[in-house]
Image 1 (cartoon, rainbow, N blue to C red):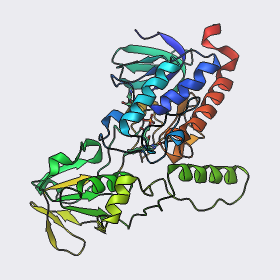
Image 2 (image 1 turned 180 degrees about the horizontal axis):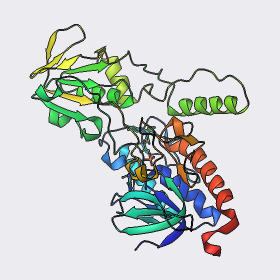
Image 3 (image 1 turned 30 degrees about the vertical axis):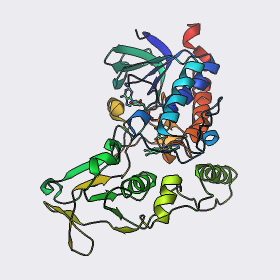
Length: 360
Ligand code: FAD
């Protein structure tokens, strides 16, 4: 049963929403988290089972409690799910699920409240934090003649493991961590071609997600202090987790330039030559899942919301957490989102301080 009104509605139940919840609990504001999934873990249960995180456990942690270290240095997908499940329980975070938010509206009366519409009724609130992530909105580039192709086309979010592809020629598209891990795993059992827009960067073995986060922090500090930051190493650079190292060492991580178009039996490569293929997997990322914000009229042509920090410029009762660099340095990572969440709750508390829901 949803509360009729609270100070703050957080939309989502993944790591970003939980980090916001952690700080909201300490703020004294009333709040609820609304998550469309029926189980904890945000998007992680949708990832393929063999996925490895690119940062060690301590560097894959939300505020307050370190992720317990498993047998391997890099946590598994299931390790991340177990951690988020326990985190939610440990801090008694009020997550309502499954509850899908369809829209956020401005109340037309004089209360100055927002109304969050869901498939289980509506909740009125003085502030809304959108923390719906990107996974619900997989991005596949528009490549000519895709409809001609008789083989399978899927996004990395639909990939479940190598067993579906035995004996088939698979083209994997995308030069980030997902593409590299999928190529590493598939190439051990079948023929794989790895197609990328530009040559990917595989980081040296000693550099992992921890280093990338430290670097993002150094850049953040430099900008805050008015210094010129070092050029960034992208969070897209590939961390050499064990499967990637093994594939690199057997020479399986060679790339070709992105193909031009599909044919019925495969693709036409960058040199104009027909290449047969049985399946194409796009590890080409995600776009923010922000459909529910449409009624507020805050989205730009690129499907994002203009923010200052994490606060919407056009709707000052709306904050966005966890979507990527545009909502805070490293905010789409477990370790990075804590900083955005803390600053967000601090700003909300200052904004709502004169009249907390619980005082009225
Ligand atoms: P999500 O986890 O997507 O959670 C959002 C939640 O909101 C979901 O439960 C979703 O169902 C729900 N939701 C969406 N829309 C609605 C709605 N309208 N109403 C109600 N609920 C809604 N990060 C790291 O720190 N380390 C890593 O090693 C790492 N590896 C990654 C590997 C891959 C392949 C990918 C894709 C990402 C990886 N990340 C990693 C990045 C990061 O951890 C994820 O992007 C993370 O899931 C973002 O968390 P989130 O809470 O913002 O969003």
